[in-house]
Image (cartoon, rainbow, N blue to C red; front, side, top):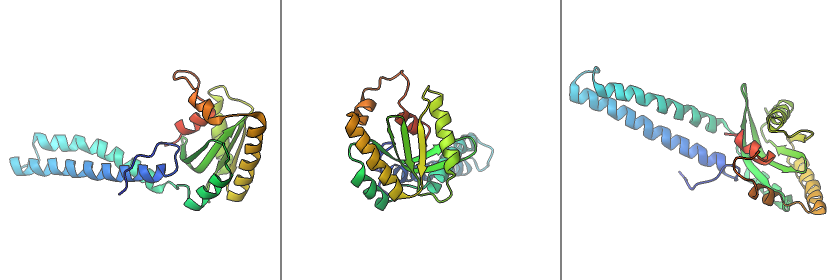
Length: 202
């Protein structure tokens, strides 16, 4: 199990978080069960302080299990799609492996980019509701004061790459440096649209 740290937004993030969640849940379960068994052996009865400790240990174990299931169900960006994206991204800022969360559903987004009031995402999830996802993103960024943004979810990798090529030309023509925009963000001030996408994701 590869546990080399991968930051949110980097390719391989979902795979990394899935591995961490599985390992954390397994360790938590073993510890909780071990405490319970130790109580039985030491006291010969379920009615002991270690049983109470084990019962309390079920809470973080349960939380970890839910988190694990969510990442197991999540769909990461495929290597082939990532290679196509990297071939045409130019100097665009690309974030990978989003699981964008809302109150009633989650949206698996393989990759995203933000440039000059354009938010473009690609999803390989056949079950994604593109309209709902676009509305949710629009609502989330509007809460930070961002309006009049064009938001598009692509489910065809080639069409997404065509759009990336168009945005890269726009970026070059306007001399925009997306990474510099992110790097210049000051903690405590309004988040950038790209960072909002990360913050509303698992």
